[in-house]
Image (cartoon, rainbow, N blue to C red; front, side, top):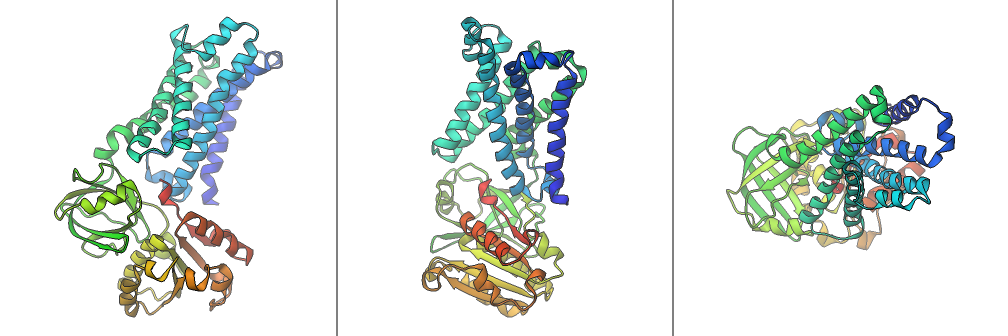
Length: 430
């Protein structure tokens, strides 16, 4: 039930917000007389709550990972709450417009940045939200520009919060509602300020230097050596990396280490496909890099496993399993593990030589290579044929392209695997 704790807390927060809003009303009957105004007010309050939680979830806080089951789950909820908050906030002025018709002089105040400063701030906040949403969803922008449009949401939230505190409203009439909303406004603003301005310096940062780099097909492998304290990561976790080289984009990007945490260096392996990964080949030996993290809960099931596991790595999604495999070679848990490495074609099985080199040191791992071009797509039914124990005993870990993970997840559930026993992580969405 732990994985539902966060969602339960959000539901309680939402109900409490609506309840405090109702208690702030001296005459509930007035809600029926001005329904659009009432709907506008409650949508604005819940919208502010959701946007506040969206900003808090973006702050990469470890205790939130514990509540929701990993940073990727935090960010999925971040997207959902952000979208819901956007819809609620945009409908706030629209409902006020409907309530004000046919008084067009008042209507214009809700649509244009004219009139009193408190209302102007609210109008500007809505348009900033709208602009940011359009840029993020409908326009394909380079990441460094996209992140700026994303940060505009924080500015919109700040202006919207000031607007809510300045205007005569239920917040100003009720101390309980005012304190409740002020808490979330301040928390959201603090979280946004931390991630935008302070995370690069105050986040969990470790100083490394590049000690090795190799390109194999379209995969680049970069090895780092700690200059100070080493980062302590579990196999299957991921880290954010920033390389101090003018020819490498000055951005934080997540990567899953592809070696064991017990080895001396840290290695990442990335597919060269995007604007950022294409610049990684410009990195040089001895370049300084900052490693942030670690994050994610994908590898926890391996750390605590007492039952057999199925590992399924698709393409570059095999990297967390490479890390687990190196860890297994050292720890030798001897747990039965079936490891499937799948790619579109045989030439895309870039990690095959490394896996074959480690396999003799991991006798409990049964390894399967799957070339989709010649063998067809890997499916739950094809994997089930190789089960050595009742299927209810298996924990299944999947990492790869999102369509592959979602399809296999559905397939395993159809053959009787409990959803709680199917673990996959979408840190590529961060």
